[in-house]
Amino acid sequence: MPAFSDGDMEAARAVPLYLVSHQLTVRPQVAYRFLKTPSVIGGPYQGMNMAQSVGVNVAGALVANLLINASEAEVAVQQAEDSWRWLQAGKCTSDADAPVRNALQEALRQSNITTVAQTGVLERRDLEDVVTARGERLVLQYSTSFTPGLSAVLTSVVVTGWGPADAKGKSQKSPRWANVLMSGSSPLILPAKTERDTALLLRTAEQAYADSGNSALIAKVNAAGHNADRQERQRAVDALRRHGRIMREAKEDEWTDATEPMRRAIYWTDDQCALQNQAVQDNAAEVGRLLKAMLSSELPDAKQIVEAPAFTQASAERGDGAIFDRPSLREVEAFTRSFHLSRAVGYRLQPAFFDSVLLPDADSR
Image (cartoon, rainbow, N blue to C red):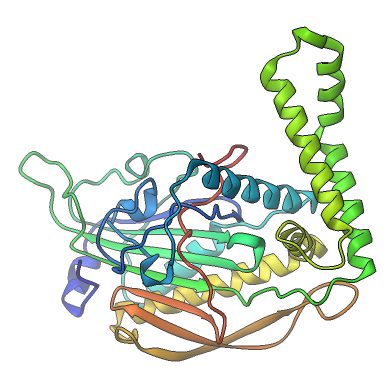
């Protein structure tokens, strides 16, 4: 599928404009639904609203394996749910909509696209519920989420230009052109685990379990005896096992796959989500910059890597919390003419799950 070109600008300025957010809050990605195909634009990205609507696969050659086993998918969902539980323990969330929307609107304005945008949020809705036009239109879909393990915040924008409706008034099956613009925050890298970390993890796990209400559920199941609801019994047992596992792993000398995101969640949500909010703002500004560069045909060509404006680097070196305290050198890599990723130099951020985000108050299966 072609990327945006200078010849598309006249239509972009004249057609209906839609800005569609996929989430209201920044939530964890679910690390499954891999694809192996090497192309970035082309081929359906099954089950993913944002990507499927343009036929985009951002996994490309970055993904080495294909996960289709149901048990592996179950593990991936559980890991995302655990990460969300630790983030919720911080009692704050970050806005995934307004910062990015404002940055995109400003980039459009600076590019002389002055059409009043129709805006909306999907969450559980289909794209067609928000984008009502079936003919020519310019659609920007955007999402901000945590990469697996809560190692970074990733903002993605899929920009599509659509042609006229067919003779029956139905939308074309695919857009005339499509671009994917992404920005990843500086990674939050943990220093060696300390006794203070262990104590903090144990307190956090105990409080999260107390807040979960599972003790009351166990009491209810036990009181019901053989008449207890089978699903409630299983849910209580699973929660108790997870709690026991995280308590054991919290006491280990080294970080584990379960305790790393738990500790990162504490950093991300400390001081009313200060780090998280800064990462969202940085990403929003960068995808706005990339959009402006796209509309002026100034993005790097395929296979090029060019220097980008620096962000501030997340650091966890102080004993009292993570801070953004030094410049982070950044680069934009053009995987194809249609897919550009801005990231910290030397950090191999995984963009493949940008549209596999944990749903609000439910799992993503």
